[in-house]
Amino acid sequence: MKARTLKKDKVNIITMGCSKNLVDSEVLLTQLKGNGINASHESDRDDNNIIIINTCGFIDNAKQESIDTILQYVDAKEQGLVDKVYVTGCLSQRYKDDLEKEIPQVDAFFGTRDLPAILKKFKADYKHELVGERLLTHASHYAYMKISEGCDRPCSFCAIPLMRGGHISRSIDDLVKEAEHKAANGTKELLLIAQDSTYYGLDLYKKRRLADLMRALSDVNGIDWIRLHYAYPTGFPMDVIDVMKERPNICNYLDIPLQHGSTSVLKTMRRGTTREKQEELIHSIRDIMPDIAIRTTLIAGHPGEGEAEFQEMVEFVEKMKFERLGVFTYSHEENTHAGTMEDTIPQEEKQARANHLMGIQEQISYDLNQEKIGKTFKVLIDKKEGGHFVGRTEYDSVEVDNEVLIDAAKHYCRVGDFVNVKITDATEFDLYGDVQDTQ
Image (cartoon, rainbow, N blue to C red):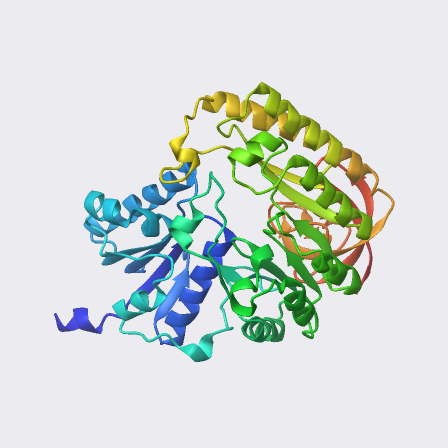
């Protein structure tokens, strides 16, 4: 018994889902370590006796993956391989009561805003002096920065407000402090994320202050790139584009999820806009900044999307020629507005529509990439993979966008460095090039 009490706990945090969840896991990791607790993120060691699973509850596949992971570690607990399993995150927030009944072997379930309660399980305190400091779980040259939490939008298909609550902005001062800490630790690129970055500041400052935030962050020494994600199109503050044009360390890149190209479906989705307004917004942005890469996402198979509405979305994609595009199939979510509608489109048809859209995008992306051959771009090196160093231009975000591949047999690059690369070849989603000189 005495030996048992001397055994030191080792905590392993497992993260499911999106970059916003990853940030939450990094904050938890920082707080645990700040309290002297031995904690790691997705460690492959087998001596961790406490597991914290940060779940995703966004769509069916993500939910199933989270549940499978919980069951995997519950099984390990029953075999005596781990002592405790805690579950947090979106799935736990949304389905806590059901999960407690179905998987009683889990020691405790927590919601998305229960960090202090998790720390209490370890007799740890929330250390306010660590606010703004965050241990990164990936290469340190880039970092996600969550500028707000939650969402006030009424989108028909989305369960995020159920899991994350209402919109809460972080203060500009706190975010600048975090950026300064990141820069001091070698971070060169900040990826601004939120459930809705367009809404930033309305709750704290009674007006949209995303442009002010970006200007303040761009003043932080050592930050070479700032990249904006998850900008809701309705009410988009155009002064953000002015700041983007004025500040060289703000990437000419905008992630703005439009979700559909049919006005009738947008109305059903409760997006507060029309196809015409979306086209007008994109044209206005491109008029101010012709050299911008616009990433968007679309949903195929939402209730109310007949063949005619889908063809409108096809025409929308063909006309707008987005630099970057992702397509999701509609997932029927309980307790959402769309969840009360009949989901009449078979999954196979949803997938076929998504594939059709991505087929169009492949050609658009190929044509745009061919235009880059012979040009030289500033590239941030992310990793070495196989026989290539892999990096990105300012027009590409981590994991979701195009990559630049540099032959490692011809050139040596350091991960986290910027290099100038002349593009020699291009495919639909990859660029190939030679290093010109190191910056």
